[in-house]
Length: 127
Image (tube, rainbow, N blue to C red; front, side, top):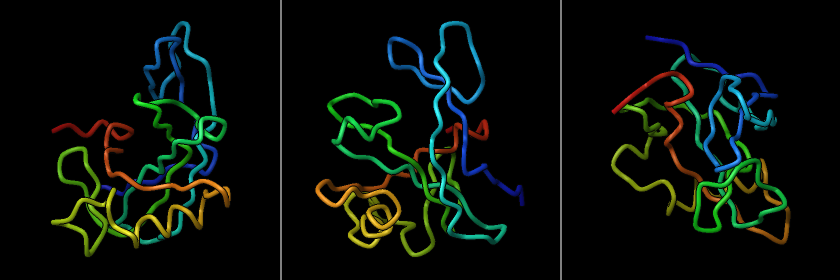
């Protein structure tokens, strides 16, 4: 099993047109994507934390939705999408339990967060 860990001050690079990568590129602006490593075991991965609160966003994914951070939980990747344990067959963006974890880690009190599992690209995972 490949151990997948990111630092709590994970650096991403955002292009003027909104593209994002985890390696520097010409024209990319370095930003810190706060990462909370809640789960310390080997069988973990990352849930991206989304919000409509632009001021908290590190980068936009379009449609007025921003990534504000990410949280490491127990689970596994299927292709490039992370599935937390217990949510293998569920849409985690609609799961109140995942939303609670996201809001505990990043919520600003007057704005809501939710999670999504499409974080495997940080590790070169495809599919």
